[in-house]
Length: 188
Image 1 (tube, helix red, strand yellow):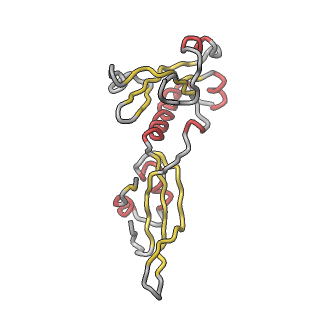
Image 2: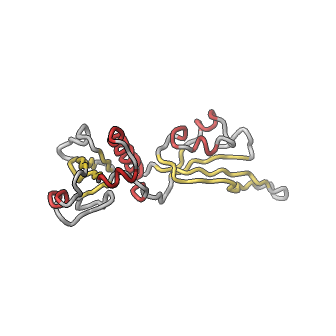
Image 3: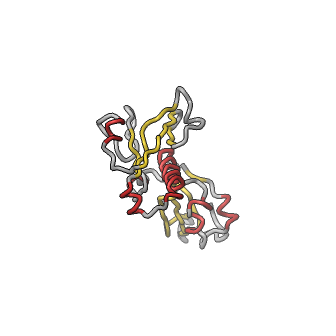
């Protein structure tokens, strides 16, 4: 979208090869068993019962459900659509060891919210809901009259499509007003 300065435009574009948030420093470990997808952090060869037996004492284990219908999503809650008998089921666990909780420093009262937030971000990754922006400046050729757009700023890795919530608004605020930002169409 061209901004109040007609020689500047801002584009918001879906990131084609985003980094998985599971490569970040997460609180929980997603342990999954699925024949078609390689999900989460670990895909053990042993069965789930054997895996749980080998966890450190005091580990917190939460069920992890998969909904697979025109895309996939994960949840720790067995609510619709994750309770669907045909397209959903338990795919594994979210595991939090006492050592990991101590390293990250998360109080018990915040564990559930932190794990849910990690899953929400991972779901955005799985859905391809990761974005970047380009700021371009118009370069006008005086001889031929042709305009070209030259990139002057860019950044990628914004999770979620709402620029006011994902950080893009803060990053491009010097180039566009809030009203202009609201009119920018996302490019797939």
